[in-house]
Length: 148
Length: 66
Image 1: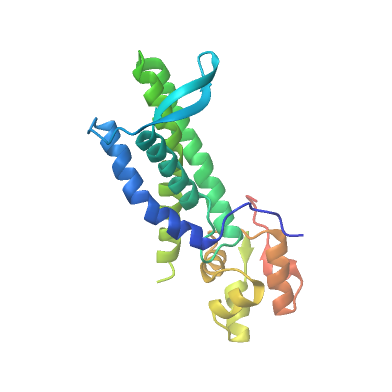
Image 2: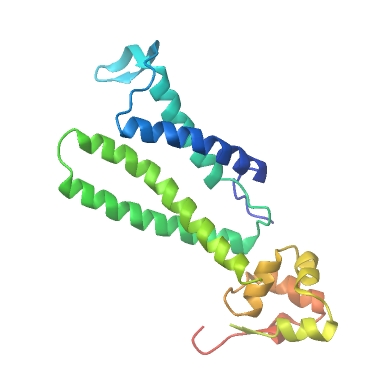
């Protein structure tokens, strides 16, 4: 019986890579406080009084969601030559990324004070994906290079 | 874990790609197994042994530190 790996087809990785550049650029702009178009739209969600009913900046919401989707598509898509060794490299990269993010998060808890801590925690979520993708792809690259 | 996959492959005169296709993995996985960098799962070890028509333990052998 083959175990399920819950990964998306390889084509999704390409879609994620195409999405990554524009959304990463928008996120960097937002981080650097570059003025983005301010499109306020009615919004419903969770807030201080449980339900939030007001407006939200559409560009900011789409940017953050798009960046997360692009990272997820890259991280959670199969490789062209996915097999059990790739699965093991995935697991090692996942654990490595978890250690790294935990360490950064611990430093943040100790040394980042004030409201900026919320931004820091949000960045740590994205950091986990980014470190995982980097570690996994660098390892795969070195494995493939050994064939040459 | 020691293995004689490279030797068996040479005896049968097949490439890493041939073996990889026969057992359903990538060529880099066969290369890593031969180099001792990757220890295959029991299923893959049995598939490789079956391909060569030999018992698994005659191709894959435990080392002292395993």
